[in-house]
Length: 193
Image (cartoon, rainbow, N blue to C red; front, side, top):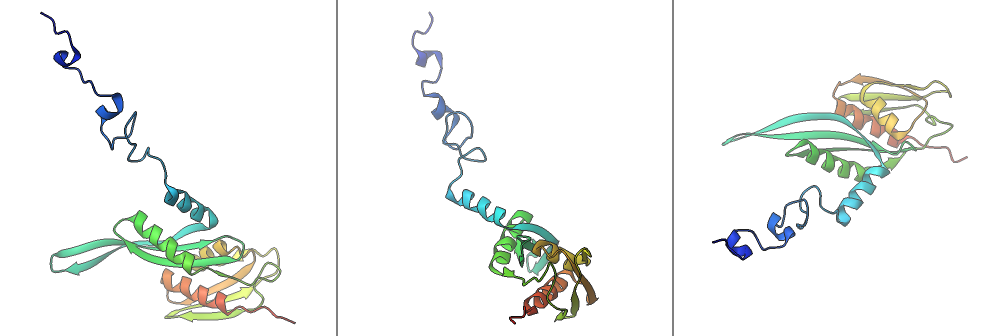
């Protein structure tokens, strides 16, 4: 005797989408996971990342010692800029690299400011200090290019400064050098005469 109905044969009578499970990406289901639709937050995040270019200046693993042992986290130092005179630096920690970079990007975006440029370079020379790091920034004629190294070069590239000369003195700490560079860039003034 053969079973006559589908239930007796042991086949599933549910529609195809319900059989796979609700959160499973693929045919039918609700489409959770990577294949799902992007909400308004995903589209907004993409727009923000297109607004500024970003470069990781420093990525380090830091530990916090507690009674239960060591807690590992990541610290990201990020420089963002539109290469048209706007630049910002952000530092943030997170449980993984992606989280720390995202937080640093948001912080850098809050710290963005515009550099006054005159004929493709700085209007005047400036020296700035942040903790032990001292940075000297000098204007350069057109065609000189960017004569800077380390963190200063990254900041000036993201800002879009085509011609400049710089010197780093004192500390070799990338974060302090970047912050000293920002202090110097904020000191720049254009003549109103």
